[in-house]
Length: 374
Ligand SMILES: [Mg+2]
Image (cartoon, rainbow, N blue to C red):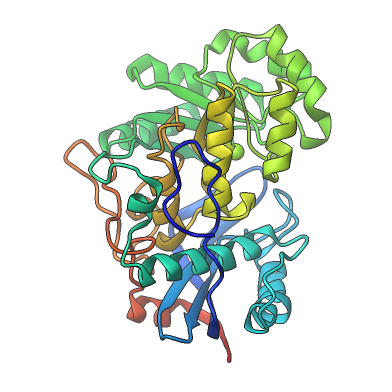
């Protein structure tokens, strides 16, 4: 079923296209600065662009932003490439549109390419289809990913982010004492709201002890294996809103967390949730339950970033998205960069589909592997 979704209806993916060819392009785009988190260190972002062309010659593009190394998720970029090239793309060509277990980002990229193709065939933008106001600028949160930055550098980077338009700063951390020093340094000079992301590295006691920092929210304090009961208990014991990220592997996982009062906020990552349609449904599910949401990021290039930013404009998104302007991360993206207004908020892509056209020259420059199936 396709068509315009009603605000309160569950959004249904358009029917998949009659596929003529699928092109998989693996790119490696240098990052402006090295990304160090508790999961991995990267100096370049690898991603797979999925281009589906239908029998009428219309092309849609999706992005698979699986990460370079396991840890955060088991689906590395190598796993995603293998799932796309040996399973998903051949299946779609044969008219089967299932998912690849263990490769949610790859599955989402196929779904998003299909959605982009359908929207383009209808000459509609994603913003128009979702009913969001394309003129509304998107507020974004600058995520400082280096987990052990010294306080002065943290302050410098936070100031730079605020100066370039961020309306919130999020500190990734794996050591509460370091986080305390960073928070104190930022607050000594800036009034910006602060959130923190532990990426599941805390135990309940150390998570409780951070309550006095009065963060806007504390993201994924406990490991995924801690389960919903631990999160419900933590919420009872503290005042700081708790955001879940890694725990939300699917719409079902989100529904389970909501039923068990395990969260105040959901980090909705389209690539991990099954694609843009499922992510929009996740945001709606939170809204229905009175729980906040924001669109999380996986260092997407401009294709995935454009789609995520449209979702970030949905009324259910109560906090700024982690998706900042692409020029913060890349000197040259694979699409024209998303613009920001005078206040630094991001202007939504308004073209058909996900709103972005590939910069073929940049794609060629960054391509490390390419496969076309007909
Ligand atoms: Mg996170």
